[in-house]
Length: 199
Image (cartoon, rainbow, N blue to C red; front, side, top):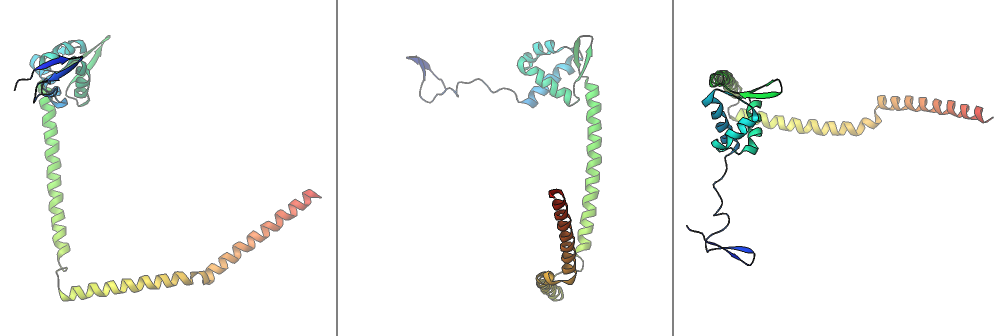
């Protein structure tokens, strides 16, 4: 589709069926694609680079120079690229053999975790099957569950009634009486102290 653009009194006009979006350049690379492209620079040359060198090489791989620093830092954070300060310069490098070793270690770790997860799943399946035994639907089980529900309702009602009578509990009454007596004695002491200071 061909788009014609004409300038009319300070603004742009597009031919029918065209828009500014239709004319935009191809989309940029995603962060993951940028990371892959920057890693290719290291793997192809097996060299050591300063950031300024990478900012020059990045655009050749489709990574704009302004984003090279962030992309390289993300690779350093993930231990795919290594950096070291030598004197006043900072150098970056990555060797494909080292990356391969890291990937093998990650793979072994994931395989171990997978085996542990499979074992855990099998154990849970066994526990589930054992828990199901004796819980098959039957009239006896259903009547036992109904009886349990009734007992739970009665227990709840009795507990609520007991809470109502808790105010008249002799132990609670004794405790309140004791606390009141202590408070009364404390008030009398402070009253005596106040009168002593006033006289």
